[in-house]
Image (tube, rainbow, N blue to C red):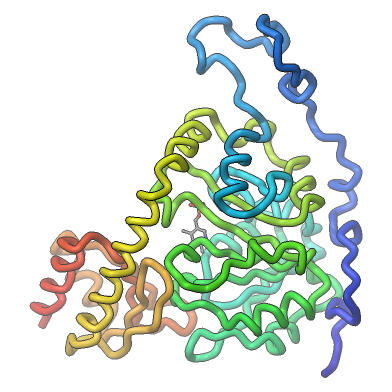
Length: 356
Ligand SMILES: *Cc1c(COP(=O)(O)O)cnc(C)c1O
């Protein structure tokens, strides 16, 4: 096997060499809530807050310690290895801002995948190198690593992948983690809908991994904008240095704590969605307009149809909106369909059965 300069020769991983020099040198903003953390004070005249309109008058906890403690036991990851942000989108953007020098460094990503990795690359002026998955949307680690060069700082993986829905093969993910000496981001936004063992439980084995989770899918809380990143304490420390001081507002922190107390609901929703998914796959497969139903481990399914544009517009006319992925690489004539409630799914199926 031939080695590119950023492809790993041994087990060494030097985080500092990957970080942008200005970020390494950065003296972060020190807010009032950072400076004073005592427990028994009762007069707070340190942050120019308005004394009225409690409790919303106070700045929220910049490091969301209570929420992280609750998530820590739920997710099996210690608090100092957890970052919380304004959706996964914040963590995605921070990866670029911490590691990638604009107009100089590049990132490698599977294709097709979630669109935000490329949007954030473009915003940060970082070269984005998409490497196609195979025709079954599977990862070939060697092919991916062939696009790595001395300026590749990050590799983007997503499993279960969006828009294909499938999990990437575990041994290929591990080959990427072991074969690359930069950062590997593994987006597990949909892992609650799959049976795969989540990689956030293997942080100690892979010092270069950043795992993404979100409250937007299994937790049914897309509106509160809460994303999670799990990584070594060193990587999380860099995120904390660069993020906005109060990046997760109090309403979101409080709502997330409430959700965590009702985690049984999340489990029930996931079970329900998985049952609906098992029902939808054969029902879709039977439709004459359906050419292929791709295997899925997520709360959506990619379906190849006879004419995606026409069927998409036909459904819009009937007030049913799916995602037309026809113009995405390897997804010609494909619709991405979210699994909804049973009545919603039945309405979709009924409409598709009547399509001529
Ligand atoms: C939906 C989705 C997310 C969630 O993003 P948020 O900003 O947390 O809402 C993250 N990654 C992938 C691949 C997704 O499909």
